[in-house]
Image (cartoon, rainbow, N blue to C red):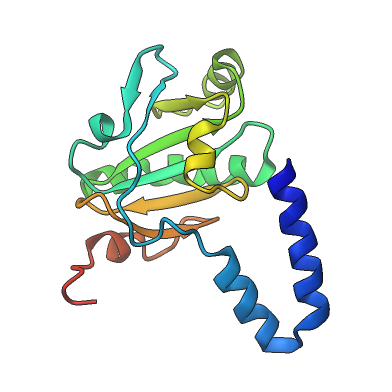
Length: 173
């Protein structure tokens, strides 16, 4: 809670001090996730199926879309439906989709998944420790993780060019 308050105070002062495009550039730089282009932190959390599982175990050396969300979030629901529609297309490309529910119980998440007929494995970050480790500002948030384990992009909607982002050779960039 303290982090959010400090963030809002900082943003207020930045908005008052910087005009036009300079403001936009400063905000984008400030809000860029510090994990971008770094190794994705591994973690172990219980999954909806009840088993403690690690990110590296589920990712299994493949590129992954790590999606932080919550059932109460309307934008998350829209993004989750989009992911469900895209599921077969994403999987055929060899990309894993891994969901991390933030701050909710297994029962809440399980009921939501069942009611909406969504078939993804879900990590349960009930105490938000992993969300904090990933410097999450809010939900929904996507982390696109390459096969090398490096976070290639962080966004609040699934980028239309997610395949290109995940398959770019770092030597070419």
